[in-house]
Length: 272
Image (cartoon, rainbow, N blue to C red; front, side):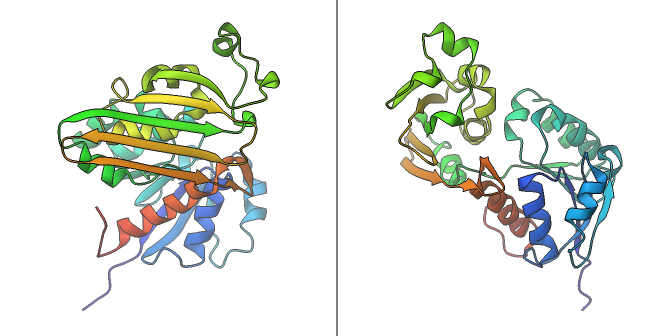
């Protein structure tokens, strides 16, 4: 029996998450995968960063990189998401999307994927346990609530907060910044999108999913509490994410989630 060829992976974006995933593949922590190419805005800088890899990949501009590999792992600013996802899906290949929130503004992409035999893979990222959410939401759902608590530095001053009379620089105790639908929260806090978008897409959608956002100067990590009430089950869990040492604005769990998703995808035994 001949062994199948490794699945080739391209990584679009070489920030903290992209680099961590690239290193995991190069170190052999994703059995059955090989790193084919990476894209970066600074090609020379990327070449220097990857020079110590055992098998350095091709380093290409974004428009060339997305033409490579069986799977393209998107690790870019959300504004560039479609630039990666659309051509890959139209070519019938697979996108593993880190910018999950961008799907809410590009909701035609699943249809494009279906029409072209492409696939969108969505890692659970910084929230986790989305398998339990999906299962519970197969029953009659009464409520889905995400409560997110972050250090004050995890938010940015905005017209919305100013209009509510909230100045982040003046917060001295745990303060509620927003309560409402996930879709409304995403509009007001675009830098805090991916977790609530992942929960909404896994469950009952952005209009029915509720979001509560809190700033707490006593916190040093991002905390996400999920509660799902349905006829099938009552699911509740809380995750406290440590910051990524390479980028404190990113949860360390996110890169690990992408690596785990790749391992699951290429494995003969998969958790679904």
